[in-house]
Image (cartoon, rainbow, N blue to C red; front, side):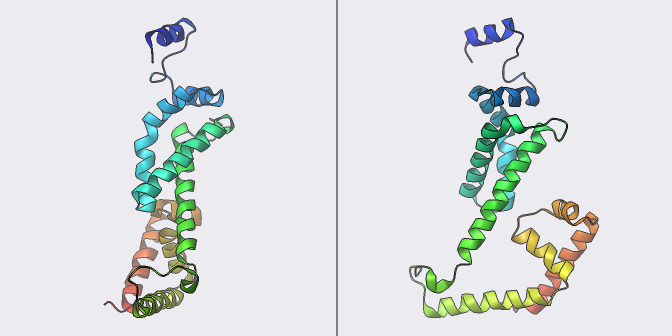
Length: 195
């Protein structure tokens, strides 16, 4: 920020973007202030990336999720309501939603029928058979689990939810979610032969 802009901000009673509260930055973004968006990104970009990466386990996809989330902040800052959530919670919720959307998109892409997908380089018919067989084995094993264990595992691994988020979403204690996942994974290890 130039000295002129800083002095002008001081004259009109506004602090520089680094000194303004998160709420003030969102209000400025709603008025089209891109420097406020940059300041908000400086504050939350690393945390947002960490959350996205934890869900996606892919650097490029995590970067995409963060970029899409901050674009959503830019476009919808005027819809932020301080009485509903802190700015950090609102922003990280947007990041989480984008990351989960990307997980689902990637799962749909991967779940396309193999005969509709282009042949991977170097893949043999035997490799394809092994992959289909392994996928069928895992799906059959999941179907043998009790509904509560299967639901927790599928939401965590395919939906990208953390154990805390699952507890909140399903309305059960965190310890119950941990127990369901541990028991379900233990049973899956018994049902799915290791190579």
